[in-house]
Amino acid sequence: MRWERKNYLSSAVETAYNLIGAVLVHETSEGIIKGKITECEAYGGFYQGKPDDGAHSFKGKTSRTQILFEEGGHAYIYLIYGMYLCMNIVCDIKGQPGGVLLRALEPVQGIDVMQKNRPKARGKLLTCGPGRLSMAMGIERSMYGMDLVSGNLYIESGNEQLIQVESSKRINIEYATYGKHFPWRFTLKGSSWISK
DNA sequence: TTCGCGATCCGCT
DNA sequence: GCGGATCGCGAAC
Image (cartoon, rainbow, N blue to C red; front, side):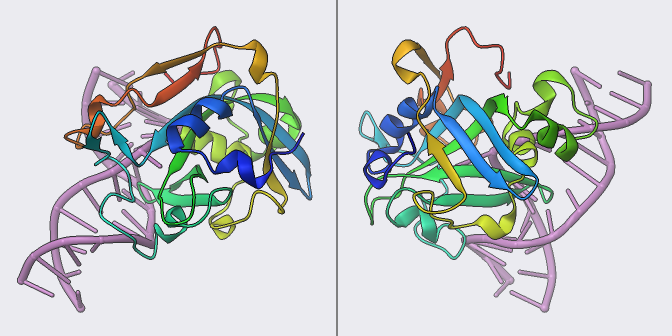
C-alpha cells in the first residue's frame, strides 16, 4: 500500500518511527528500485522543552529549506560536503517544519540497478549511509520538492507491524548544543543493514 | 562579493 | 584510522 498524505502529517519523530520497516520506491526508466528503511533520523521540533538546533529548519525558512515548511509528503534533497546528496522525507503540517533523513536501506527490488548506480560497492556499502542510499536509489537534486503522494518516488507499507524499533543519538551533529543529545535516530532491531 | 563549513564517502596507510 | 575531495548555502563584510 502506497502511503497517502495523512501518513506524512505527523511529527518528524512519529513519522521517523513509522518509516522503519516501510519501503522506499523509485520507479525509474531503468526499472523499479525498492529498499526497506532500516535507519533514519528525525529533525525539527522540540525534545524535553529544548529546540532542535541540529535541524536545517532551526534558523528559519531559506531558499534551501523552504520545502521543510510545507505540508508533509515531499522530498527534501540537499547537497552535503560538496558531492553527496541526502534524501529526506518532509513531514508534519504546513508551517510546522519537520524532516526525516534516510540513512540506510535493505535492498528489496532492482538490486541490479542499484549495483549499476554504484559499480564499486558491495554488501552494506551499497545502501548504508545517507549518501550511499541516495546514489543507489538514483536520487537527483532535480527531485527536490517532489510530491511523494503523486510522483514516481514514494513510500509503501512493509511489515512494520512485525518489527521492533530501537532509538539512539543522531550521527554527526556534535555542533548542536541541545540536539546532539536527542534520541531521534531510529533503527530496525536485528538488522545488519545499518550505517554504523 | 567573500569566506567558512557541512545530517559524507572513499582510498590509502 | 586519517585526510582529501568539492561546492552550495548562508552569514558577514
